[in-house]
Image 1 (tube, rainbow, N blue to C red):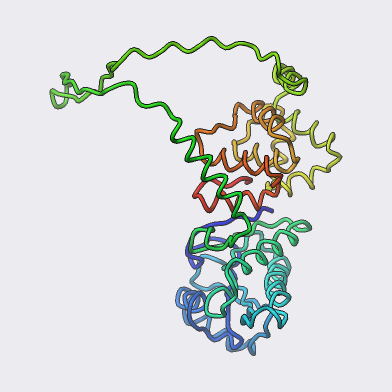
Image 2 (cartoon, rainbow, N blue to C red):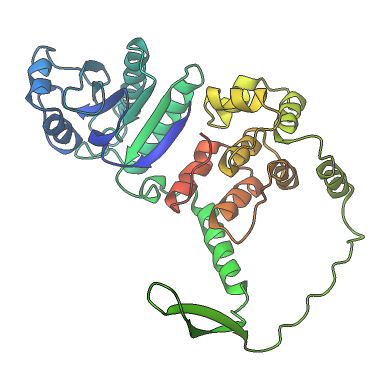
Amino acid sequence: MPLLLVRNDITRMTVDAIVNAANPSLLGGGGVDGAIHRAAGPELLAECRTLGGCKTGEAKLTKGYRLPARYVIHTVGPIWHGGRFGEEHLLRSCYRRSLELAVEQGCETVAFPLISSGVYGYPKAEAFRVAADTVARFLEDHELTVYLVLFDRVAAYLGDRFGNVQSFIDDAYAEEELQKPKNQYAARWAREPREDTGKIWREEARPCEAAPKPAPKRPNPLASETDRELDDLLRQLDEGFSKTLLRLIDEKGMTDVQCYKRANIDRKLFSKIRSDPNYKPSKTTAVAFALALELTLPETQSLLARAGYTLSHSYLADIVVETCIEKGIFSVLDVNELLFSYDQPLLGS
């Protein structure tokens, strides 16, 4: 763990192994296959000639030669024939066999392209779903960091899986932008002496008109008992993020391993959080744990407050997370797919 989505050139990934979407001969071709062979140099082709090809759904390993990666795992994806000829089973086998080879070789980091989604014609949305699901299942039982390397924005691979959710996010963000107050200050430039050039440009602000004083906040008599209980919890400053997280894991009846894997968090990072009561995680890590624990929105805000954060409608990433929680989408991978489609920071390690 974890599974990370990146936009990059797979031949430049500094990982233990990269996966090549090869053809059955393993002797090079177009697309990712050709790019890997060109970057690795002729030594890769020479070793591939000794392997005797590869069957669809299987995988074979070579050295990385001139690549930053130590190894290349070659796998042959299925050609798309409408989905009626076992294409999904073969594609899952490509990812699973490649990961098994990586583990056998002692690899800790692996980078995959989206297998079969090029000239082999596998629909991108379906290829992405199979890749993400197969890798996520494998990582439930193995400590490994896997990169899924994409060339396009992930929106091109989502299909209509999140259509309604994406529309809701877009509408919420557009409404938030419209509701932002207009700038109440006009800028004017003034010159002041400076030692190096003798002049400096400084922006001063002057009010265009008197801004209305904000109305004093009043306690809401209709606040629910749950909200008041959460407020009480926030005032318990002796319980920091780490202590709160561990308590919530116990209350949810989860194990530490279940929690940090569902949160897409590396084991080493979780160990730091567990061993240091004063550890302050990044906001993306804190949100990932809230999703892993399937917390409600008020509960999420309470947990984030322990680390000094909050969800705000001023940030698109926060709107995405809040929408997913309200819609009952707690899979960190699913939320990351949406965040990636909006070019927002991903959750987890």
